[in-house]
Image (cartoon, rainbow, N blue to C red):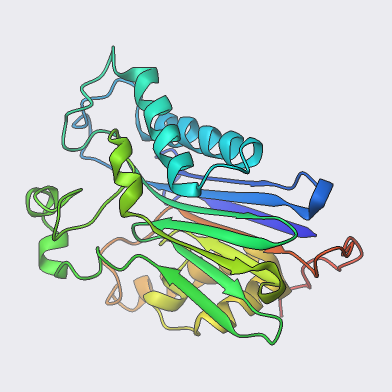
Length: 277
């Protein structure tokens, strides 16, 4: 089993608000991947004294611990408990009722010898590759259904945040876990998986440099850092052309890639990323 993660901040002047972990316990061929993309609020306007990086680290840590230690618990329940645990850590010091209280997108995957479970909330992506190379993208497209003109307005977006007819993120309400996209796939049908924040999935969704299958191929051949370099190269080229493809020059970008191998096998001899052409 091989795992690879990489993350780049959108700006050297701001902390990276993404968070990622890959826990590979080894025994029983199981493991988990957790990936979060923190939602950046206007400066000083989230009712919290800690900030988004603190929130994603707390939530990510709780998700990693619970998903690895409680195989009996469904992923939606794990997310609910992790949100509650994180909220309890700062409800005495912060206004958790604030519309922009720290929040994040969530990708959570967990596997054992029998199955691969997944959970996706908001606009980060999970890729599942079958043994024949077919790639399934698990996406929560509710934010994409919001018109771009609305998404450019903080006030308009706030009116749709964590509301019916809008979109959902992990913030302070544990009940939002029931809104996540969840599912289970037999382990024999998944040979690799990947998780991407929207800063990394720009390679497919914004620049159209390839489809999801090609994206997973880049992760396999060049590693997570290789995909992020490709995204930054495209962003730089777009900036030189006048920035026609995106309204935000760079975003925090994070990718995780895991090769599961066949159940019961030890793929430790799998080679690492090949040099970038």
